[in-house]
Length: 323
Image 1 (cartoon, rainbow, N blue to C red):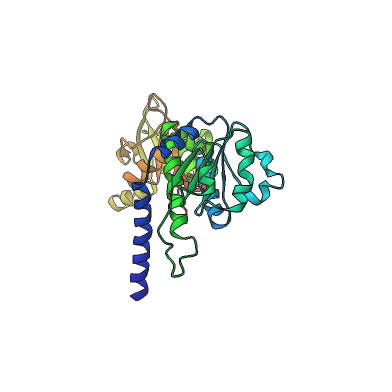
Image 2: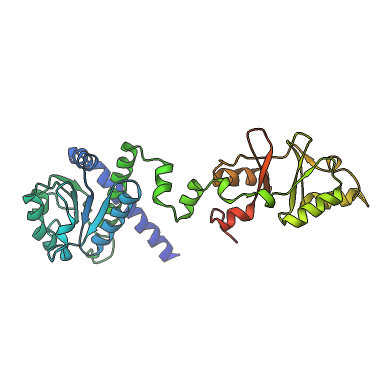
């Protein structure tokens, strides 16, 4: 219990540290945002040690939300990596003390090429601050650990400020879900947004379909041959009018000892839910979860079944996590 209370207190202190820097915002934040939004190149973020790790994360956030960005290690920069920085770039330096020697050493290069510099620091009167175009105060009175030496609260405020800047920038650029999906094609979120039903549905010979006038036995044979656990039922015009699923089989046998020769239109579930082929994978999943179904017919504009979608298709595509 003691440790739990101490952790709660430490978390509250970190939260208060973030709230405190919000109160210190001034015109510099507007200037920093203007520099980022008007940047014709990329955002180059640099910092040493644990602050550098935070810088890598902020850079990754900018890049993944539509603003080109790289992380520049200051120690590597003085040995040739400065060539990664272009005249159209904007540099963001992160240093709690504002006196990090590696950053001070490379700063004249940026100033000499008129590359704008944004400084996130806990010391607005530092050497880095005096030579920067925009200075954002992320300072904390004291680090959280007993010695007051290990970067903890200061890295939290740096990360929070970086996240806030990236958020405003993506809003101003009208970065949307489709943009995010294009930049994250390999992740679950990207797959959810990019993948359409047409990418995974069973069509052609794989699509189980049978006429309303067919017998229940014929419906079972069609279901078995296609292996999807269901069959779409169509009328004489080819329109979807019903469905029979594995679950329906149990219901049918409970009410009839020998239904094999009965017509399927007397046994089917009428007017089943259906989706269009251009429906997104995530929308299809929402429909299936809402109505507690694991398979759904895919229809064209005339409501003719052209394919079948199974929940397993979405699992294999990575949209639904497999238990």
